[in-house]
Length: 285
Ligand SMILES: Cc1cc2nc3c(=O)[nH]c(=O)nc-3n(C[C@H](O)[C@H](O)[C@H](O)COP(=O)(O)OP(=O)(O)OC[C@H]3O[C@@H](n4cnc5c(N)ncnc54)[C@H](O)[C@@H]3O)c2cc1C
Ligand code: FES
Image 1 (cartoon, rainbow, N blue to C red):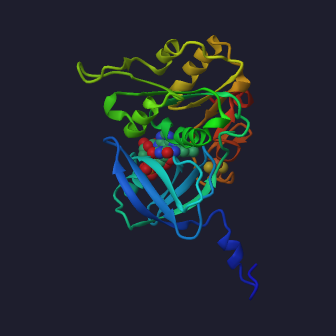
Image 2: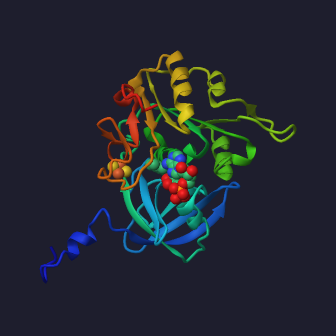
Image 3: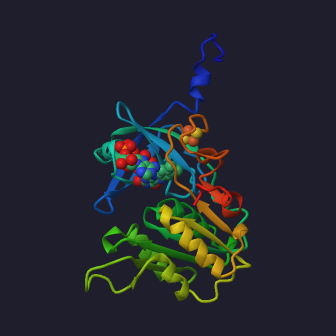
């Protein structure tokens, strides 16, 4: 209730349902369908943790959950990569710097970066899964002394679908990061790296220590089952496997039921889970 009268102004101001205006500051094409966006909130930083998402809306069109790709920061800007797949995402792709969107969030659970301190990190990312993982990767690199070995695996359909290519080159150059990647297919002469699905990368990283490593998996649904099988072959405990699940979402705040899996709301209880906590759910993987 607001102080001056009995209206519900304050309630509205703090409402999880009320979008705040953010201005598009920068837009850059990454692939034929994916673009990188920098947005800025007027009065505050988004205050997110790695792995969280926000609901982004275009008036008259709709709202979509999108992962936050930048690491936590005190300034008012944040980054997203958005695939042009339908009505909302297409409208966002048609925006120009200076245009505005609505933002609700941040929502959802985050990668448990504090619990992972002192451990080796193994990121296994497929396609657009690199987008939320990048927030945790950049956080870990900003706090490099807190983590032991950092290995990043990235796989995508073909070389034209690679994301963050400039940053990948930087990660490859670092001697405190082991970055390896693969493409499912490529044309002759187009690519001199590994060709094959992401699980083919496991044989190229010797000495992954399952007792001192947390694996963080983010990618298309089909990838999880096979990556988890590879991790089990290496003797990983399910308590050391962290997944970020994507489900159809609407409200983002545990009210509408769109994202429900048994008694779990993925938008609120996830989207980041320890695999051990959700492996019993039939729909999870
Ligand atoms: C937690 C979370 C994080 C996400 N992060 C990102 C991100 O970082 N970048 C990004 O580009 N996308 C992300 N997505 C997916 C994004 O929310 C959807 O692509 C978006 O909602 C599509 O909205 P639209 O109005 O453009 O498409 P619509 O017009 O609603 O649909 C277009 C087509 O895509 C299908 N579709 C729509 N949503 C989904 C879905 N969630 N899963 C499978 N098929 C779907 C529809 O059936 C239809 O065929 C995320 C989703 C979740 C739940
Ligand atoms: S999206 Fe509405 S309950 Fe999860």
